[in-house]
Image (cartoon, rainbow, N blue to C red; front, side, top):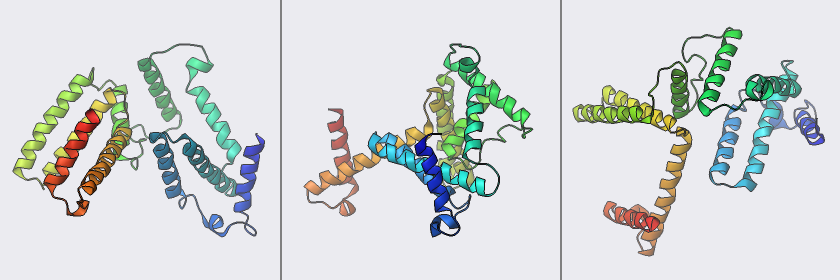
Length: 263
């Protein structure tokens, strides 16, 4: 174990010391630090999206601290410690990469995915987990991520379009059904269901293009935000406050920025 890691574990233990530790750290539990873990994971993703690699170094440290915190809590409860976590991870990585550690084999992306799914299925059987479809896909995942995982699981069982073309045709079908539902009653449960189906079908197209839907939506949201900041700037040059601008003025600024970006 490196000196830095040993020091980090010692710092964490000191923070949790019942007598001399930090009052905030001493009060925390597994459940209480979950929101902080999620926040740190999002901050890592944000730094990567922005290509802020100097900031990423710090964010990764903050995320690592979350793991160290859980390890300390586990050690205090007699459940596990950081060494046990590392040992389990090492064993899992070797087990899930037989083409690297058992025999040197070059596999295609499709073969790698099939091998991964087979190994995961074998693990579920060995652990006597509920084998009902999707039972092990965490329900609290972000909706786009969960939809992607569900579709990947179905695809591993052979239930999938051969290419993105079929998935895209399904989106077109869902768009028509949404139009019909909205025309009937835009606020009905049926309309809500059809809109959900459209989102789910769109995720399927994204999956077929080997992209992550959560990441693409983040990028699209960032793109919109950045462009709207430019709209605000264009209007400000015309002495127009964004909160007082008309739709026509905002739309004109938006189109101007779009044309400028294309040029």
